[in-house]
Length: 306
Image (cartoon, rainbow, N blue to C red; front, side, top):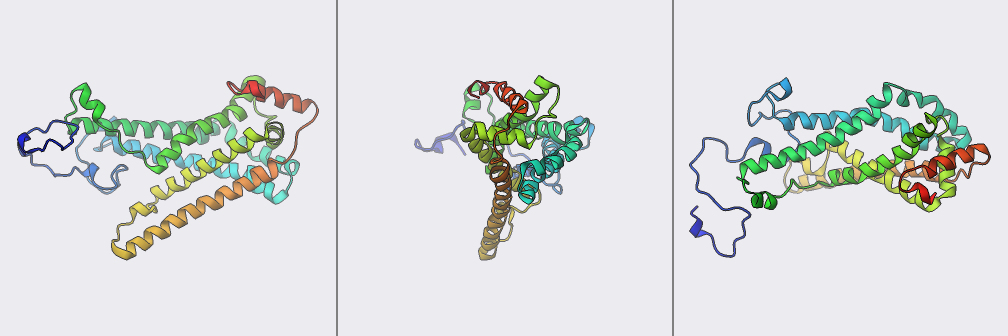
């Protein structure tokens, strides 16, 4: 199309250029619908030997790093919801639930399990997701000829899905929780042996507004992100329905209600045990309370209000 055929009211971020025909597909394989996460079956758009692992592009490996890192963390999340919600709901008591937490905690806090199940997978998951977005943007720059600085400013980043948005919100919440329950106790006492359900109950009793609000937002965000993330990996999201017409519309609605239903039930169980039992366990007394207060007051930034 010649440039003088464009009307004055047509907005375009880049100048149109006349190029010679090229013997390639009109739509690159990795830009086809639902291609932000490449499938296992399509052929790569170009051959490369990324870190020597085969003829796939970087997006292929970044996506798999992001996907498989969720497996290990999901194991930890299963342990965690069991210890902090399901068992307290069964026992209806914080002291009665504490031994179960102490019994299973060495399996995911001792070396090498903690780096393999918690810290490592979390880092890989977040880093690979960010790297994937940067790589997609670099691809767009090459395809659309964003050579100048002005062109690069106009070029939009890949759209943020609802799952990714929940993940971005969850990152600082999870980091704050890890800081308060793991990092600060290790820094002060060399470990988190004194940090258990009673430590959480003490924090709820001493600082109810911050604790109840923070815990509710943390649990809801993480559960919805994990649930929809797993639905995405298993091709169960409404957007992944390929059937058209009324049948496809009904299937998409069913999937939307099913995925949100799982997230809602999981969140309700976690909050019922975490807020209803542990959160109402009451303030700890004696020397143990002094240790808990010292830990809370040592939390960076917010500790001065504790």
